[in-house]
Amino acid sequence: MELVVAQVADILVRFVVVFGEIALTGPLSAISLFFGVVIVAFSSGFFGYLVAGAVLDALSDALPGVDRSSPPEAK
Image 1 (spheres, rainbow, N blue to C red):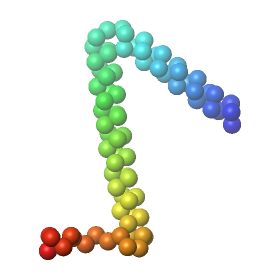
Image 2: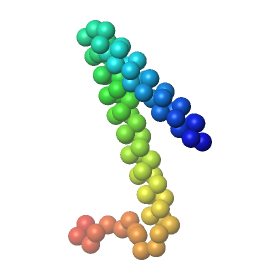
Image 3: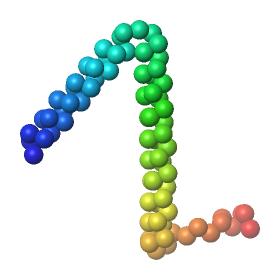
Image 4: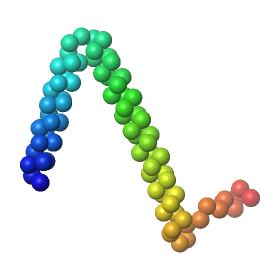
């Protein structure tokens, strides 16, 4: 198990080095890499937000005392 963790850490370090070299080859490469990172980070974060909402929605049905009724002021 420790060998797998060490290999994954080594691969991650290599990725950082390779992407750093790519970003330093020119301004267009750096801009493209930056926008790629932003798009992937945003889509992953949004997907995580949706999954968290679905999990909380499912848990609110299972937990007693948690209801979705409107507040009294809204009626």
